[in-house]
Length: 443
Ligand code: SAH
Ligand code: SF4
Ligand code: F3S
Image 1 (tube, protein in one colour):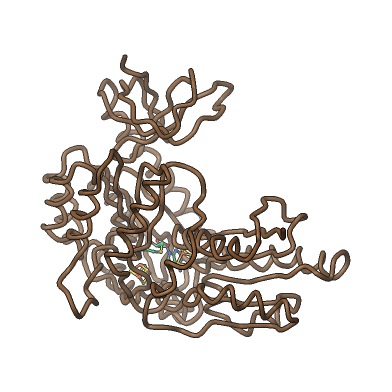
Image 2 (cartoon, rainbow, N blue to C red):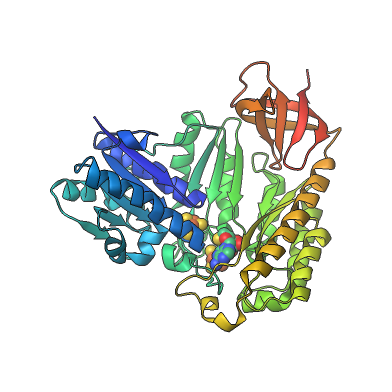
């Protein structure tokens, strides 16, 4: 038996890729370990969305490179994911102890790569493909992280080319996976005891646009998944604002297993900044979409992403982002300071870059606004009875709790009596904090 350690950075897409790579490796006698010191094979699955994420990847392999040089020449080191896809052979220059570089397009080449590095070769597999690798995905089991939620990618890549974003360069053009494969993966996960399926894509609502032989979109997929027997939940992320169709919203309302939750990144509250970002909507259009979703879906949670300090962003434009969070009552938002990325359009606008101290200050102000709104959103549910799917139990502020999620993606802490992981329970909400609700089981 050999051991593999994988350090996974970045978004759920990377987490899902890691689960697939672990499945392939187990087929070849590798067992996962969470102790890097014990591993024969060390891999990092990297994210390149910001400079900081990229730096983290190189610092992880740097430590392993030292071990390899000073302690154990036999360990193998793999550099995978979005930074690998983008930098390919250049990785060997910066980190000469790396045995293989594997991009995001060809993760199913991993078994062959392992054979080659074990023969002493050094391998770089970062060629782009314009098709999904579904033809081999049924050969290996997916080794999912234990829990209640199973991630299932439905589309990969992105065609939008927002001026700040590296994803189209690291994940390629948009490719939809076949419904029959997605449905099989969902059934397998449910049979294995998972209680929730989250469909993944950079723009889930574009699902199926690239099918030539059929007219089949996200709403169709949701309907088929909803028809699978048993009690479970379905979620999908991320929605590009203008791709959300009326049919999709109606489908969410109509289907009992599909949860009342939309992640609709806005990125900026200013129409001018949105234009410079190459987002295909302005503030008014975004407002209309959010209103429509709220009007049609009762108790819906809408979350967003924002970037602080995009090149050229003025104080007034920044304030429009602050006011957007209030005006659209966004329940929660992820926040990032703008980070210039190689190859992207905005990275060339050096003369418009916002100084770090101003970016930091805007980040803090946005963060405060997001927290205020999150608490406001949580307070709406005090006194209500809600269904919670328990995800785990742990100690929180000196007290044992069962922690789970409502259908609309609110975290609820329930006093611990016994482990309820994987159970659906009815809970009365007794209190609201910024990041979670408190509740008691309804007898
Ligand atoms: N497809 C999704 C976003 C995927 S990337 C969408 O279109 O909304 C996840 C988030 O990372 C983005 O929403 C954005 O807020 C942030 N992000 C992407 N590139 C960034 C950059 N260069 N600097 C800072 N944040 C960035
Ligand atoms: Fe990046 Fe824009 Fe594509 Fe989202 S839609 S992944 S932000 S390029
Ligand atoms: Fe990062 Fe790649 Fe995801 S750049 S955010 S891991 S698609």
